[in-house]
Image 1: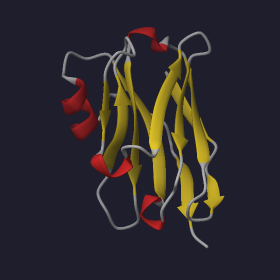
Image 2 (image 1 turned 180 degrees about the horizontal axis):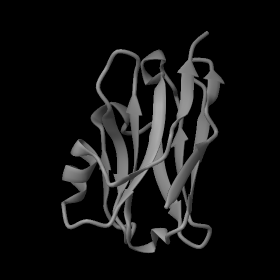
Image 3 (image 1 turned 30 degrees about the vertical axis):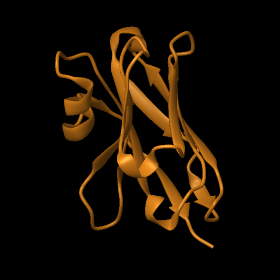
Length: 125
């Protein structure tokens, strides 16, 4: 079971980035998935999560209207489109997956079972 993130980098405030996460060793079809981040000196936090059916999503308030999560089960990938980036979005971003029975809000708040190693996003001029 492996999740591998890509797409991080340095971007100016107001810019955009698209993160990708490729899953291998298992199918994402029946998993809730999410993006989490950890800024320097801060605790990890859930940013955006989407249920296995794609019908429900959970957003951190600070990214609503700016970030979008999507999934492509055929390619076994998930994506995070980040627009209007701010310096406070700077963090190591992780994708995660979970097939457990907890609610999406709970999983997005407290974490999921499987994790990638992260990709660094730096927002700076």
